[in-house]
Length: 73
Image 1 (cartoon, one colour):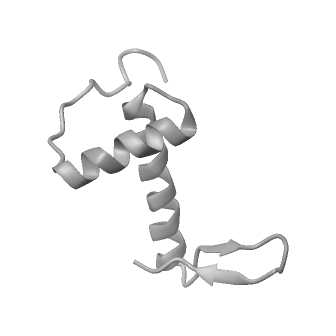
Image 2 (image 1 turned 45 degrees about the vertical axis):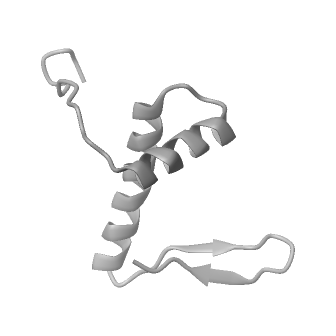
Image 3 (image 1 turned 90 degrees about the vertical axis):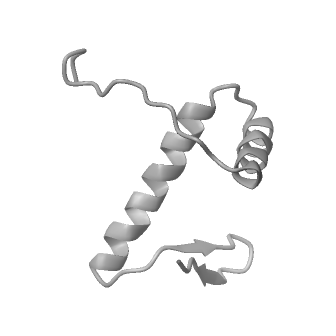
């Protein structure tokens, strides 16, 4: 994607709880780039929405036990 196609940055207001979650995740992942973290989270949500539309589901699998847990929306 060249510079002409790339969307311009925007400002988004988020509530206090979401801001605290963002800061917590930034600390856990060792990043200072909240925008990239939000982009990753939105990408994961987009993947889940696409799977749901196709009749699929997104799940977490415990590698130790093999148990799976579907992520609900």
